[in-house]
Amino acid sequence: MTTSFSKFDNPLIVFVSSNALTRKLISNLLKEKWSGQFKIFSSIEKKSLNQMNIYLLLLDLSERFPINHTDLKNKLANVDFKVCIFYEYSLEEYINKINSNRSRAFTLYRKPVEKQDDFVKSSVAKYIEPINAPYISQMISNELNFKKSPHLIAIGASTGGPDALVKIVKNLQYDMPPILIIVHMPPNFIKGFCKRLQSLTTLEIKPFEENQVIEENQILIASGQSHMVVDAKFGQFHIKKGGAEKVNGHCPSIDVLFDSISKLNGVYVVGALLTGMGKDGAKGLLKIKNSGGLTIVQDKKSSEIFGMPKAAIDINAAQVIMNLENISQIMRDYSLQNNA
Image (cartoon, rainbow, N blue to C red):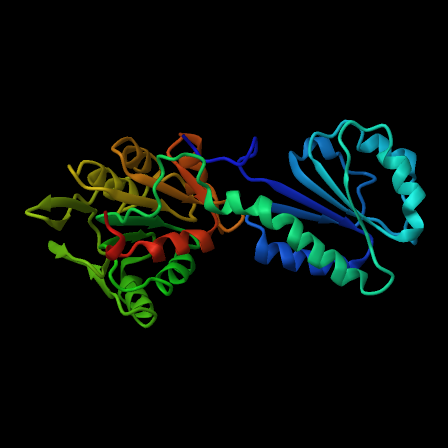
């Protein structure tokens, strides 16, 4: 079952204000605090709200830039999303006309005379906090256990992947399960990328160049012109070279790694598919899901390219869809001391 938020896969907040400074403040706030999508407008008079799949509409109304109350009332008459309105004291009668004869009342905030921008910002922050929490955690199923540490973690990435991996790796704590990574980049760049990651963590970063064993507190990054596949023997993970043929246009391929991991018996694994172009990794992620592992994909907002995550979502391979910051948090919390 793919994680969702109410009826929305990626909840959209729309903020409208005629004040440029207020729009800037709220834009920065939502970038920092909101895990879904958002849009900022100076006006909604020419916007078709019912075609945007909005979760929450935030309206900042000003007497200086009035909207005809009948037009606004008609525009909001049949919406099925939440509406929160900020208004000045002088607009009290205007607000009553908009809010009259509605079966579903709007949430209203009357702005103070001074420091209105600060008031709107703090009110929006408090308002979105409780509705943001379930989207961040993305736990709609009791079957998804984020506290159970996996025996092995596999991560695939492509365009935008190096920066995404930097953000994940620099936050990892010691006592981590083994981590295998495939990132689509020229083989001659892999060693330099490993050095970059090694400067950010106490975990051991190694490029995969020959058959070897991977252990706790190690991160192995595929390199060369052969696929990376996994086998489990005598309680150890043996990483071996696969073929050299391109799969989904790539060698090494994320799908090949994920497929091999899905075949490990008695091993709980987590597969994560990050930003990237194309479809590599989607089918392999589905195999991990079907074999009992946990599957995570990066959301559209935080992905540089949403191709690979979207391909996984389209075939129902993703159990969890979340932004990069929250993926990093989950990975950081996967220490062996929590292993059940």
